[in-house]
Image (cartoon, rainbow over all chains, first blue to last red; front, side, top):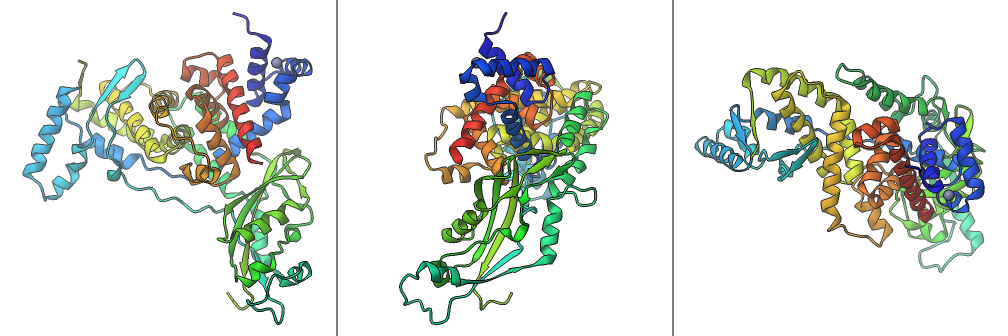
Length: 339
Length: 173
Ligand SMILES: [Zn+2]
């Protein structure tokens, strides 16, 4: 079966996205784009495809969820009947048996142990490779998984907001000039700033947390039951993050200088805004995302406006400029607070 | 009605093998499923079911080689059939903030949110294609054997999934 030229272009675009395309295939794709505005518009060129792939890989690298399947699974496995299990009616019988036993020993620790089985019927049927589940286990019997805090956001810029002399809450809106005066000091904690900059430099000694997590995961995929395919899969991911320099403001980390408006000072607004700026290959910020709001929209907006007004050094991957993300945080505090 | 015999004598072997399979794959597999279904509770249920199915398989044949591919294949089928059932009652949020909160993921990086937004819009076969390749790192050939299709079909699905991701990201700027 022959593919239509557009279908063929989609296949090529997929191969390029995944880094699997041969040089000939890349040329073929370029030729198609030269003639086909529709494909160019909907899929983009090779750079665009690679950029989208890096977004997915970045999402993968940022995973923090640590699920626990083992505990509930082993409970389930250990509670399995040792004789013959029959699907359908048989299951009801098994459940009934267990519930009867549970009834007799209720209150003892044994009863505690088997209780999950009562709500966890073994209803599984096979259709070829497909497993059809008719009942789900009960959720509240699972061990809850606590979300782990992000470790990449560093609080290091403390903005002390000082109201000019004579400014009281009764005073109406200030002029633009006064607004500029409202922020008197931007104190920069050098110790934590150094820590932060190391977070974004993938040197051998200072590996970003997500990258070291990746490396920690890697040995899990060299075990005996693993196919060559999955071992390769893991090494692919690591290779993709090799020799990376993250995007940073061109004029250093102090280049971003948020100036909260007077109203923020008057209202005594305080809090920490953590944010991310997407940086394209040219070093231009394209998008600002608040990852942790300060609790005052005005402060978040101030931070994003400042972050978007600065020029960046683009992220580089093996020396090549690629789209990247710059992450940072600002803490706003009234001037009278000392901590 | 199907009937399965559980051999008590072979249980320790199956036990040991399932323990090592779980230890090795639970995190990556559960995260993969969570991305597919968009809900950690459902993902845990599905992951548990996958390993349980693996255990049942090992009980009847303790020597049977169970690869990561087998686990992913089972997980993908379960996730896709969950999505099919869910589609009927799928809620379409209008407010983007709500949408972001509604994404039941802990990671708040923009890449993570964009990906999850795109995932919610993708049909199951495209979602599986992009997740197995770009996300989990399988080649299109490997993904094809997991999904029971051809490498070219996987590539085409990846391309279409990326187009949706691109649209999601453009809308958000
Ligand atoms: Zn075309």
